[in-house]
Amino acid sequence: MAYTAAEVKELRARTGAGMMDCKNALVATDGDIEKAIEWLREKGLSGAEKKAGRIASEGIVEAYIHSGRIGVLIEVNTETDFVAKNEDFKKFVKDMAMQVAASNPQYVSRDEVPESVIENEKHILVTQALNESEGKNIPEDKAKMIAEKKVVGRMEKFFEERCLMEQDFIREPDVKVETVLTNLIAKIGENIKIRRFTRYEVGEGLEKREENFADEVAKQINK
Image (cartoon, rainbow, N blue to C red; front, side):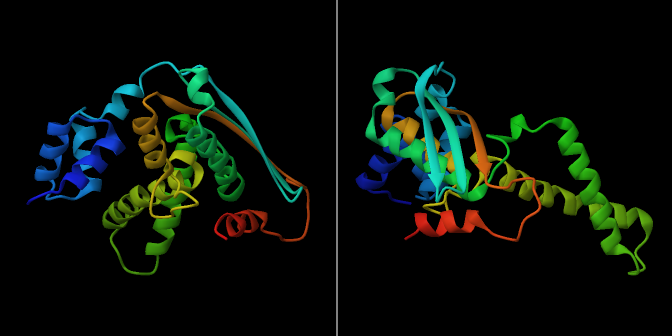
């Protein structure tokens, strides 16, 4: 399938890969840019992937407070102080603070989720899936196979909800936070790493009436 110069340019901007690599990726994926990005990453040809291994010890801490009800502190690192002052970088950090406020992740990535938490969640999901098979005259071994298949998909949903990098980006719900970060790394030319965050909500852990401040944040962002 033919590709345009504009598509090659976009792919280079988003991945930092070489021109010929971008052309080959577009040919291999029939011109699908998103699949071409994956193709480049799989082959280790994405410039952003190479930059991701470099040390990032500069950066900024951003604070976001929504209506005095939700507060977020987030640290995002870069390789140099110069990039930490870049407007695109600062906008990204602010967006991430708002993302944490709106979506309430517990971890930056799935690598941070303790194994004990994962195993406990799997146990709960397996039990739920087995309960769903009760009364359907399904043999026990088959019921377990069905449960295990359900758990795979439900665990992915668990990670998407709990891990910031796997959440849908609040400004573009069809794009993952990880993709937004990868694109920014390719654009700026330095490694960028979301290191940590803390989220506070008024009355958290106390008995109170039902209010959804996270929805309020999301609505404000999408105005």
